[in-house]
Length: 135
Image 1 (spheres, rainbow, N blue to C red):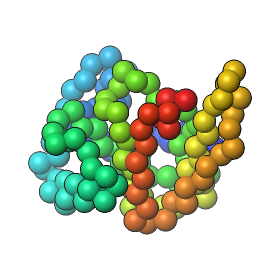
Image 2 (tube, helix red, strand yellow):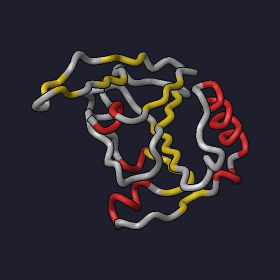
Image 3 (cartoon, helix red, strand yellow):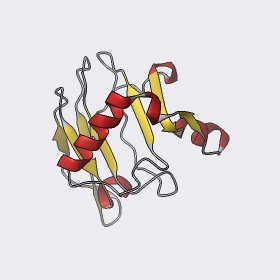
Image 4 (cartoon, helix red, strand yellow):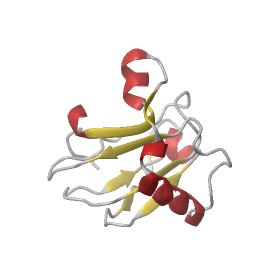
């Protein structure tokens, strides 16, 4: 989406902390996935339905739960290859935002390609890898 970035206080992480990696340059666990059995079950099923993840998918896992209000959304960005694993799985649990997920690639000298939109209705799941994350 093109909305305002979300305030950091509205983010809840499980597993390895993206926020700590960003702020402190260190990877550390903030909350154990073992403390959230229903979340573990949801993640395992979503990954299975979307073509699976690595056998050791819980190692190095980062789960970010965000709450978006109207006008808020995830700003356009390119993931850095140095953080976490190759594939990113997303799942919409609930959405109060008036934004949608928007993906754009680049061609040649960073010319943006046509956008691809993902409606954020509850139960929507997606998987990104390769160029979808880094270009």
